[in-house]
Length: 177
Image (tube, rainbow, N blue to C red; front, side):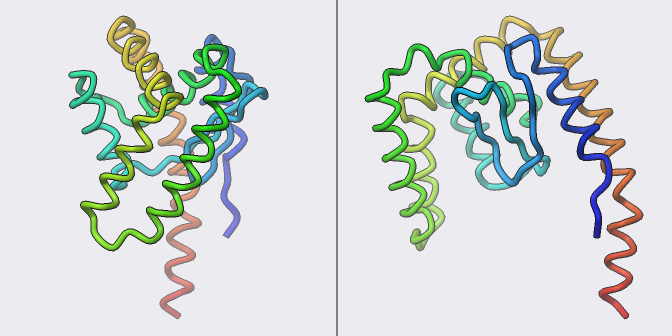
């Protein structure tokens, strides 16, 4: 199955993030800021456990209700870009080691309670909390821009899904045969 429209979707996302200094965006299986390269990776699925917990964390920690989880996750990655100069190499290296430890522990977590506790540890790492704080502050103070951004991104996402709906239906039909 060949996925169509990825370049156009990436361009639409990157265009919306360009004012923040992000030069490119790439569809991937996770959200990530690529340090020193002014680019991000993003995913298009929402409603995963991590997405839900991230929104809960923001509500609890910042008293802010996330209206558009996709946009907030993108802004969080922009937040890494915007706060990167405030993170020393020592703190950055500490955070990377902790993320590796947490990711390893999540894979071994036997209960959802343990998994959620580990996710909260991840969300509270210095670089993560700074990026989230930046994203929440921007969202609070730029509501009209968020609405516009979501409208443009939503339209691009819908086009992407429509382009690939036929492929998905064909793939499902082939599986049935």
